[in-house]
Structures are given as C-alpha cells and as structure tokens.
Image (cartoon, rainbow, N blue to C red; front, side, top):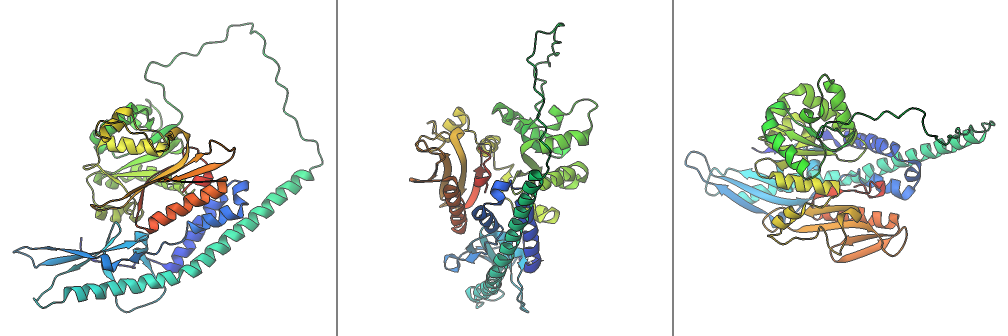
Length: 450
C-alpha cells in the first residue's frame, strides 16, 4: 500500500457535531439514577473526546527493499501514542502543503525512494513528520472547543432529564385517584382434569431464545464457519447459526432479526464474499451497528482472506477495529477469546495447552472469573510486547465495596470510586501505547462499561 494523504476526511467541526449526537443517544439510554449522577455523566462525556496522537520521532526505525527491477525504497517507522483514527480528521487550520504517510496499528509509515546517492533521507522524513506534527497540534488545540461543546451537551441533557423526572413525579402526585391494585391471585387447587403434558422436543433440537454469539457470514464461507461453530459449541457457547436455528418454512428476515436482538456478541466473518453479498450481510451488519449505538461494542470481526485495503473501501469504521485473522488465529485462539468476552474461564485442557502442560488459574489473587464484576486485558505490539491485566471484583470484607486489581496492586472503595479508577487505568494504558485486546462486564453493571 502506497502513501496516502492524511487528515483528509471529516472536518473537525463536523466530527464534534457527530460526537455530540452520539453522546446524546448514549445518555438518553441511561436509567434515571445514572443519568442524574453528575460525576458519572461527566465521565461519560470524556469517553467521546479525541485522544490526539503524540508522535515519538526519537524512537524511529527504518527498513529498505532492494530490487533489480525497482528503485530502492526506504520505509521509516515512527511510533505514536493515541487514537489512529485521528489521522483521518481534517483540522480547522489550513496549510497549503499536505501530510502524507500510512497508519499501521500505532505507527506512522513514511516511504522514500531516493533518486540519487546524495539524497538526504533523514531530512526528508523529518520534513514529513513536521507536516504531520503541525496538523496534530492544530487538532490538539481544538480539544478545548470540543470539550466545551460536549460539556454543554451533557449538561443540557442532565437539565432535560431532571425536568422530565420532576414532571413525572408531579403528574403521579396530582392524579387524585387511588392507584389500582393488582388482583389477588387465588391459591391453585387440584385440577379436575389432567394438565396436558407438553410434547418433548427431540434430543438435540431444542432452540434457545437467547444466544452468546450471532454468527454473521456469507454462504460461500461456510467451510470455514462450520468448524468454528462446532468448536464454540464444544466450549458450551450458544451460537445463532442459520443452518442450526432456522426451521423449515420460517421467515429468514424474522429469524435473523430475532438472532440479532437476542445475542450478546456477533462474530462477523469479513471476506470478499461477505463484502460482495449485500442483501443479507448488509442487513445483519446494519442491525449490529444499530445495537452498538448504545455504546457497547458487540461486533467481533474476523478477517477471512481480505486485507485492510478491502475493508477501507467497504466500511472505514470496520477497518480500524482489532480483528482476528483466519489464517493466523486458530479456532482455539478464537474460542478462548470468546470465552473471555463472555466472562468465562477457558476449558482446563486449553489452559493446560497454552501454559505448556501446566494448568494456570484464570487470574491472580485467587479470584475466579465467575466472581468478577469487569476485566480488561491489554498488550503492546512488536517483539518486546508487554501485557497488562486489570479487573474489578466485589470486596470480600465490606458490603457494597469494590476492589480494583492492577498487577500486584489493589485499590478498594465505593462503586463510583473504583469505576473511576477503572476508566482512568484504561485511558492511561491506551495513552501509553497499549491496545485493549479483551474487555468483559460479566455483571452487566453499566458503571463498569468501557
């Protein structure tokens, strides 16, 4: 992939307006107790701010390609901390020059093809870095404006919710008619006729009303999908898979909609067939994006025989998400990651295999995954990758008290105290270049939803 013009997408002011609308939607979905908790609402606002990248030019590296048919190409790699998606936002300040490069994970790539032996490669790369830095600084200066706009939005939402709560309370208070009581339920007596016994379902044919995973895929990819479905089922993961769920004569759209609404997560097999088959795959993807509007990520992508370039043409949003790769991530790897998402420990034999024959507990300090409130795993990229795990559990000593475990350190406090530390740890790690690989909220407690 060649160099691209960076900062060539959405204008920063348009982006701020979109973030304001997203913030409103997430806030409106909150229950009254959370919506009227000002500290929680302001923390929610902070999640919609841009994490403008900071380049680390002192840590740059390079590699070259030699070919008899093509000129020498040198690629400079400049690492950065922050959100890679920011490189596609157009700053408010204007400059007649352009910034070019490629963004791969958390690195800026600058390609150079020197045409003569005395060409100063390092000076050229520094000039390109300066163009990128100028635009990042412009976006960083816009963060004051963005923060003010989001602050005004969230405070406006709080004021509207307060008036709504007060109005509802006054209406109830002024009805002036006694509230209808539910009818008393008579004590059942022995029936005069035998109660009909429902006909049992044939073994293996019972269909659940809810599923752990919705499997979204194109028909030509079934040879890859079906073994994955079987591996998930062996790990006691319930899967909505059209071939196993839809019955003879059942409406396809109705069955898919039921699966979309009643599944906790969706594995989306992104392939060339998926991107080309628009009728059902796009219907499923639109339904999943609609559920994500409430702020919780449920789409778990797997790239199957495609590249990031293919996805950029189809949906830039999907191209920026961390994904599993079908030809490098095994079925076991995917199943273990799904189990972590669901808040369940991997099976004993898989943990033994991953630990070189020695079974390893799910986490430290004697805490079982089933007792957790929420947890997240992080890692950096490269040969010297680092790993960090943080999790929250209820206190064993004090009622309504929570504990945040970060490596060897423990921090306890009220739910609001610990959830604030949980969010702060998440932001700090991402600012340090860590990528959140796994997050799960087994308790479904909205205070710990990242």
